[in-house]
Length: 379
Image 1 (tube, rainbow, N blue to C red):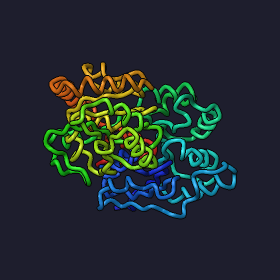
Image 2 (spheres, one colour; image 1 turned 180 degrees about the vertical axis):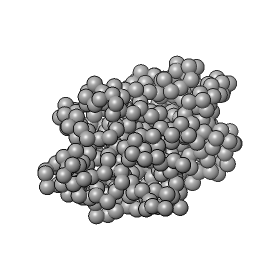
Image 3 (spheres, rainbow, N blue to C red; image 1 turned 90 degrees about the vertical axis):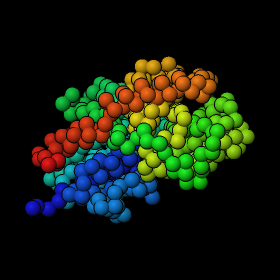
Image 4 (cartoon, rainbow, N blue to C red; image 1 turned 60 degrees about the vertical axis):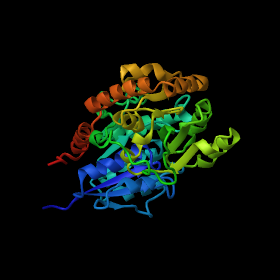
């Protein structure tokens, strides 16, 4: 038996969010036969590591060159040199684009391993429109990538028509989850620091607490719901105090709860009675798939592929992007009608089971990585 394959993962952040948790899940699915090294461009942003099974072989190198900084030839060469010794380099989002550029510039001279880039969305500074300088940089940097993986139709179009990537390089893979783990009756004590009491209803969301998720908007929209409703936000991030401050200003602190990151959302999401997003930007959010699998109705702005992901009966509750009043109205309508919530939730669950199981996702990612490596990954 030969030496195990070694994968290098270069992330803009490895705090628990959609792409990070998908990465963790894929590591678990590929099993302990592959060694993984995970680097975060943001110091200490590694909370998604809690979702990786303890028997996986994962390291977090502290001496990897900084992924952020001026893209000088010296710095790019340092990053490229650090890629040697791995069998496959996996990069994620704009925060790792200097590493992609380093690979393109030095791959041939340094005989670097193949690289697959994953693009899941954009930071706050590109929510309204993409930056021209970054588009040019991406076009050049992606020149030697074996594949560019995107989860949504919009990102597929951007990769093809804005970044001018050949169709043969672009792979659209829908995010998937272990559907069988969802839809079970949860323990009311499943979450730390908050217990669901008899007579309470929970509006819930799963999100990194970052500005682009605009969770303060969700708190304001939630304010219209009756007293028996509570807002539960699962996740961690830099916006925590700002969200709590908004709840305090609206005198909602007793009904807004931030229990923190939950490594196994399937054990908690069933406590929700209704699910909501409030993001300024999304592509193909895993949290929506999780909500669907748990049999929940969803309220969301019309961002990314969300409308197309949901069952047809749920699409009337996808509101115009940026329309806070519309978001509040949709929440109130569904909060006031339990039978409607349950009927829409059942339709969402059926769609999730048919379309978004992780076995399909694993097969697709395995095919992309195997194509880059020139060998099979799954036996």
